[in-house]
Image 1 (cartoon, helix red, strand yellow):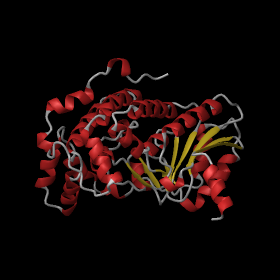
Image 2 (cartoon, helix red, strand yellow):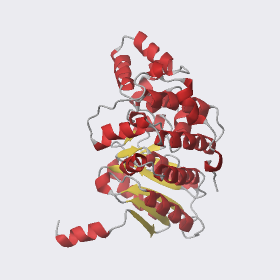
Image 3 (tube, helix red, strand yellow):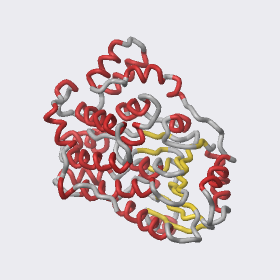
Image 4 (tube, one colour):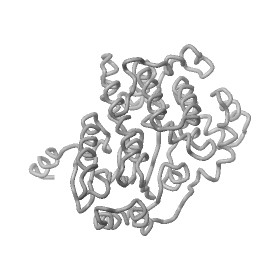
Length: 361
């Protein structure tokens, strides 16, 4: 890279907003960080939607990520960690604006197409999986690994996971395991698998659609490039997952896995043993409450209350330290065992927070 090219690359904004044909393009543009989203990027996405929503020349929105590695690896965890370390308020501000944006995307009046190629995690799921037309590829690696950070699947993740078939969502939410493209279709996080080699052609076809395009026309255009796959490897193990994860308490899930001597059960148990006990207990309760909820907004309000408690917790800082800061992969959870997580510890995550409550526009 020449000095001039480097200067151009450096001068590019973290979010590129453009009008191409009748399409409002939103491109996450931090490829070195796999397009991890900052507070300013969330704000700029909201501003872009403010422009595109009333504009009759814009028929649909296209969300895409720069670079080859993925759409988005999530929110800027390091910045949240640094704020939590000094008892700052970034979590309170960022999650409020992010969750309101998630709800806006879910209710956006124009077709909202997300290219979920490569890595799609955490906050990236929130920007894409609430859209009306969600495209994955053979390279998609979608995950909500938050319980490994002493957190839980947020950004409306509890709503999405609770609407996956059977206990598939409970499985992905508690283990943080990765979905491939067809898994994401089966789990209802995506709508169509398009080979990555055809994304550019699909993009061109979307640009050629008229501004007054209907959702059905967008579906038909995407369908012309799709493989038709609707289920990945996880569908084949749903009977076991449904049996293991049907319990209301983490102790029940762990006991079920311990009783099952299969290799898959033992590897699942090993994965759970690496996660934050408190994070898993909170996540499971959020997932069960989400199953009985009637709207995404209801789940986001609940997630926001819990997120503020997480931000103040030792487990969040410890989880991020072990995974992102020191990278020793050896978090010291508090408490260290599921059976030590008490009702009193969990209660604050579900308490109303008065003036700080999440309110939608």
